[in-house]
Image 1: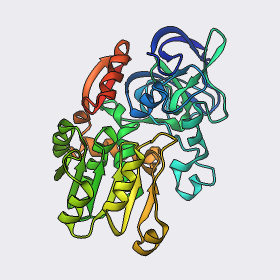
Image 2: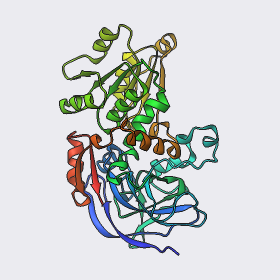
Image 3: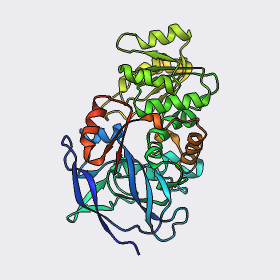
Image 4: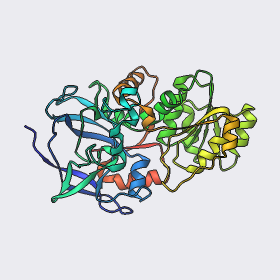
Length: 370
């Protein structure tokens, strides 16, 4: 029978402080329907950074990291879909398959999604402790550590010939961005798209728009390097928002506005830009995770008359059990670029340096090797 393990982890003991590498975090054995995974690689996401710097408040010590891949180490009673030795991608939104939302095909609204906000298991407990004190399981995964404990549907089996140090970015960035384009917005062939913000999520939206057959993919980001990189992923028109009025440019280029505008930076003011840049009857998709104090200005009369739609998107409205294998297949077919998303690789000991890169908008994604 599996037993509790002590493991190495990057621990955030207080928000606004650097993470500390410790070797005495305890992770319990998997119970019925649970899986314990040995983490090999984990990307650093802006949501992790927002907890680190205090933008998203948390109430205790926490192990962050939620964009990960690894190898199943042990399973609990009743687990059927994976077994020890399987290679898996971890997901922060494991669908239960039985709740009100799952049976209606709305898997990213599953009751288990609350774990992203609570930083616990679905039942409110945490599998992590240190010296007898509980440690939170960050953003529904807690993967800046040697091991992760998750529900069976939180670990999606992938072929062993897919590199884990590449597959990990599917866990959050690719699911969120590509999914927002294909699932939430359901972009049609020939549609026009505006992506506001070109971090890992924004670049993934660009890839999703390209896969959907969008005719024009406008991108806006103040970082020149990111705009240039976006071209290789499918962007067709680059906008520097520090020199150009984005809305005026879009209206001049299209005459009516874009069919779809995506906010991908987690900035409430950019939703306002998206609303103004979308055509009458167009759709604005909120994908980034803004501070809880951010607000959006909506004029109801204009929304009624212009028939614009505003959609929220959690993890790209993905059913991870379906979408992770689909995205792996797209990668294997050469249609989805995962390697290009990864601009830096660092050992877990350099996690604070990786956070500095993300804060300074250097590159797209840093993958940490556990």
